[in-house]
Amino acid sequence: MRTRTLAHLSDLHLGRSPETDRAAVRLRDLVEDAFDHVVVSGDVTHRGRREELARFEELFGAMQRAGRLSVVPGNHDRLGEDVGARLMRGGRVEAHTHDGLYLVRVDSTGPHNKFLLAGHGQICADVIDEIELALAGAPRRHLTVLTLHHHPLPLPEETFGEFVSATLGWPNAAELRLGARLLERIGGRCDLVLHGHRHVPSAMACDAGGRRPLAVYNAGSSTTLGRFRVFTHLDGALCGPPVWLDTQDVPALELAGTGTE
Ligand SMILES: [Fe+2]
Ligand SMILES: [Fe+2]
Image (cartoon, rainbow, N blue to C red; front, top):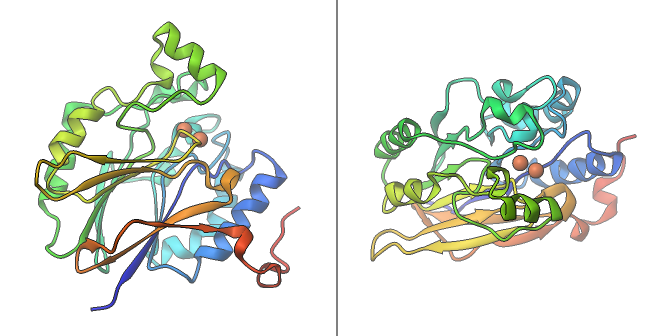
């Protein structure tokens, strides 16, 4: 059995600026033939516009149709024309097997996300039950990964707005209210939680209590960073920590003719 690779992108924010869209092209060019699977954990659009979603589909649609890319919605995708349902059509929890990978996608957004200042995520006890059920169906010897947009654990405030929100006790900068419970419930059945939302990357190992280790990774904003993590796995287990891949390291010649205007 050969090793498989999984790339984690997040928070592309297509439509934010020409630079952002150019960065997304560089990411696409780097991932399209290089990895077995790619996860994009939400905020693929900046204002939830259909034209921004069309740009995402233009860049990543072929990989999606080939079953090599999976996406979940983020709060920005619920703004404007609300394209969230077009990113995940089958409900709040969906699970699929992809060649050595068992991926559970979770929609952590809600209708409140139509307001930019209410960007926080929400999952309820029923969704956690659904996730648990999905994980119970994980095939043996598959890397088991849960992806959602919002962070399940507290993270430091990164912007002045987040600092103000946290100080005032508003929910929009906070972790998922049931995030800790979610991690408790999936412990021992899942290897990775991949999320975004906060634009500064982070990584945390959960106390597995001697069970199967669980790690939580925030990709940050891949278009802003110009880099993303790649996980390698074999026979259902990670082959060490992930590595960062930087789009700046790819020779310019390989990217010739791919810029956007
Ligand atoms: Fe974002
Ligand atoms: Fe977000």
